[in-house]
Image (cartoon, rainbow, N blue to C red; front, side, top):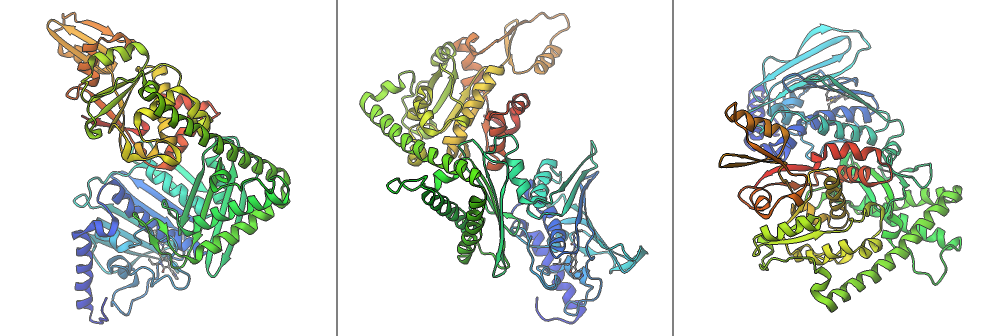
Length: 638
Ligand code: 2B7
């Protein structure tokens, strides 16, 4: 913004700014898909959260109105209602029409939440077909409406009076349908992010209300902050000790908070945030906290003679087995790096995080010797298992080298060596495996029948997994190796297709396989190589036409298309084993007719929870999942 005092010139510049946003929305909100749409909400909510962090607001409400209109309310001081000298516009109009105006009006303190893009209210206005702001201040209600991408209908004006002690800001907007692929908000997306915001900013109450179809309402309010976040993540697990370790400290304006607790699983769940942004690529805050964890636990174990002088030190992996840890950093000037700009780069933060968390953890271990003992035991078991797994891996490697394809004797491999066109079907049971072998196209389709039970790897470490024959066979067939040696580029098939019966046992086997992939072959899932086949439920023969259908509804629909007196022969497949090779080829394997569902891992955090809810000790969430396991598979037409 140049120094301009002439109202006219400023107004023109303003509109050029908003026009720039509409020309290249991706530059400002990343995308114009569903994620971009939700960005509009995050931008407005961020401003309310900043007002809360400044200490003036503790209640934020987000409402989805009918027609996908969003209203955000806060009970803060209310945006300033005076004039802005530079722009010649009211401060409120400036906030909503001048790009990057945010930050200059905060007055003291720094902008904490400013989303990944941190672009502010003007971008939301530019991308809305209408937006209204109401400010409650000094007993007055101020109002301004904008239309068509940020054009003010009238200047800011007082439209009503209110009680002197009523203060706050309300923003209502409707995303411009010509700017977005969709303008329909997703309850789960809003739920997850607003809950995360409430965890990360203890004490703030955030209410989410959906007025669209079924009225829904959820209040997120956590006085324990990230302590309660850890408790939620461990809800369906067995914690090793009751208390969540919580440490908080500030150094040079950098605030570090860490909460952690161990459970009896073998996975590490470490999530870090900077200024409320999930730093999925980690960074210096996460590194510092991890480094302190390894250092302090080793020191404690040595000082208490739990670890002998000639024992190897515990590694980072050892001390993180079964951990759930949240690291939250608030920084006045964060530098985001990495592929997705979600890695904190500020080098000074590593020492701050390490000191703050290290001191707190050391103290916790001293004051809680029972918990300390359980933690060290767990880490030492992990260390022994790591060494055992290493041996087992070496054994697998040697065995493979020695008896070559014997280890994968059950595999009917494809002849092609080109992974991009090769597929492997993991088939439940020997008889279905037999039909699949007859039905396949040998050049590109490999069949691996799975006979035994797949080990539940949620309850097993790598060493036990490697002792399981079915798993060893899968590892050998994939060609990628496992653990530290994993190499995605060695994957021998770009489509891994799980083919199980359409019944509860089939669902169970599929989930066990998905758990295995998720824990040990996650990059394969992330790269989109894993699919579920969809075998039909019925074969309907009417005269000369054969029709395969997947569901009872489809069957009813098909029947309705036949003459009323028609008597088709309906054959219900009880399982893949009942299909002959022709049925299988026609319906499930042949590229032209089959329907595959691609397995996606939308979000490691969510999927991690789904998997552990499902496969962990607590059986109750499992049934629910099996009934709606389409949650992390999406339909894909092939
Ligand atoms: C960076 C800009 C956008 N702002 C203020 C003061 C309060 C305030 C805001 C807000 C979203 C939806 C309801 C400061 C900050 C502008 O300057 S923005 N509250 N709430 C908000 O946007 N909620 C403020 C100093 C004195 N008085 C008020």
